[in-house]
Amino acid sequence: MRNTADSLLQESERLRILPLDVSDISSIERAVDLAGPIDVLVNNAGIGVMGALEGTTTNTIHDVFAVNVLGTINVTKAFLPLFRAQKSGVIINVSSSITLVPLALLSVYTASKAAINAFTESLAIELEQFNIRVNLVLPGRAPATRFGENSKPRMATAIPQPYAVFAQSVFKGRDDNHITHPQDVINAIWQAANNSSSPLKILAGEDAKALAHSSN
Image (cartoon, rainbow, N blue to C red; front, side, top):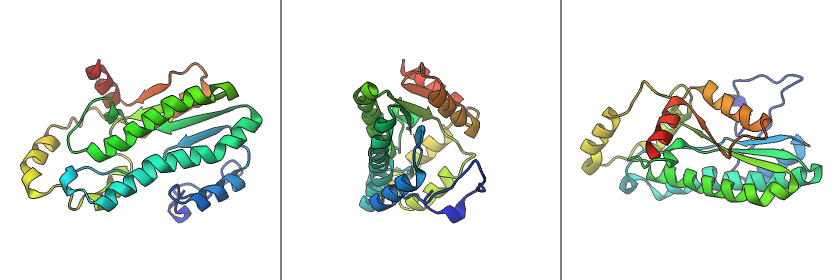
């Protein structure tokens, strides 16, 4: 993790916590060296932003793509030699169900996750020859995590006045009865890691499944 001091977990004989900033190539390389042989790589690091494109700063757009897209690509690339050498491995990229149906005020975040979808789909074909499986996990909205709270500083100016009334209607229209729980994502990742017949895309959460249904 980027800041090991923020870890909610404690190291043990079965758990080792390593520093890793996915936006820093040297940090990725150190993590690969320290981690050694692994069986499953889960690319779950990500940052979010909700707001009108007009109110989203260029720096914020850059940060979202640097972490969500380039971070995933660079970490995956760094671990591929290990997977090829052992002729096995699973790569699980955590995307988002918002890529299934267009949603307002999420254009930048959706674009970053749509890029991960396309990257994963192509990579799965490319790596099949090496017995390396690649999967996508698509969660819905998970308010019980720190993801939303960590996104707030990037949304300070993201809804300028011309969009305020529209934004209020979007927020009022949210369905808080159907959400994604952390356990939903855990189950989806576990399925991808342990079931070789899993589909490329695995939905996590009732709202994710509802979006998939509405897109059909």
